[in-house]
Image 1: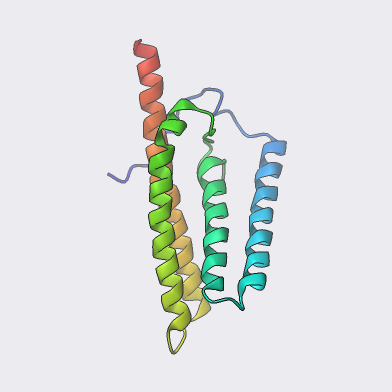
Image 2 (image 1 turned 180 degrees about the horizontal axis):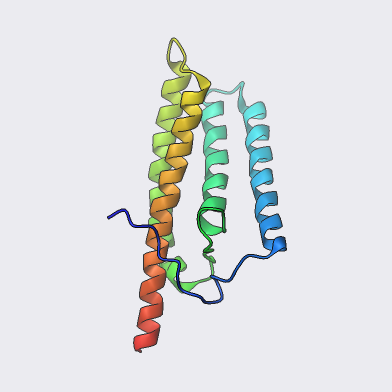
Length: 154
C-alpha cells in the first residue's frame, strides 16, 4: 500500500538531471522562500495574514517538490504530459484539502495559549508537505505507468 513510486523506467523524463536543471530547481526554492518571507512580513498586521502567507509559501514549496526532481525522487513530471493534465484536477483538489488543513492548523496554533514551541509547528508543516508530495508523486507515477503501458499495448 505504501510502496514508493516506480521510477525504474528510463525515458526522456527519467534521465539524470543536469547541473542547470538542479540550479534552476534550487533557484525556484530560494524564490519560494523569499516570496514566503515577503508575504509574511507584509501580511503580518492583517487579520489571518500569517495564515495566508503560509498558504502562499506552502503552495510554492509543494509545486517545486512534486513536479521537479529532488533528492528523494529522480523523476520529474512535466505539466505538458498528457497523464499529468488528466490528473491535474485531482491534484489541485487534493492540494486544496491540504491547504484547508494548513489554514485551520495555522489558525489553531496562532491563537493557542500558551503557544506551541516553534519546532512543533515546523515538524507538523514538514510532515504535511511530505505527505502531500508522497501521495501526489504516487498518483503521478501510477498514471505515468498506465500511460506508457497503454501506448506499448496499442
